[in-house]
Image (cartoon, rainbow, N blue to C red; front, side, top):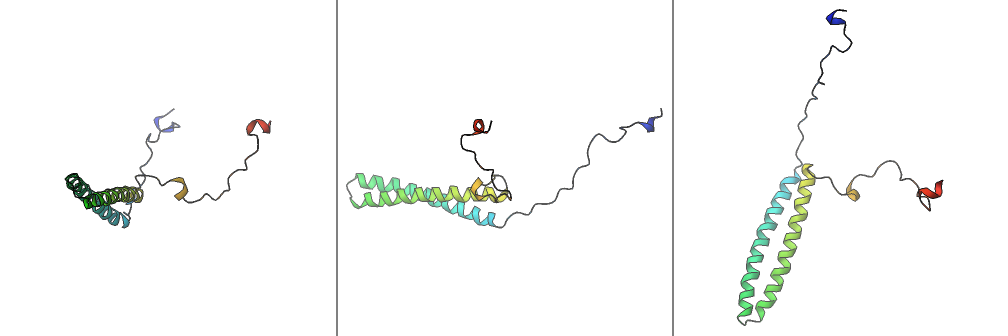
Length: 121
């Protein structure tokens, strides 16, 4: 038996597949700008709410209204920033979208039998 007649004489490693450059979705830039804007607006509104809270405690009644509006605005900015951030992560491919946003499968779901698996026996 010669050395070249062996059955498994080839390389033990599989050839590496050619890596294709993945194109970045242009919406990621828009999402990044939106997240930045929302975070800056959130920070400003939190700072304003703290300032309005101090003014309201000094006795100015209208400051309570501004405090309330600043708190609601800060919560909305934080929510919008988190949502835009998640959209950016989905566009980059770092996170998979929720099941209701994924493309539907071509096969219909299996019929549910009343009574479960035990009823099938």
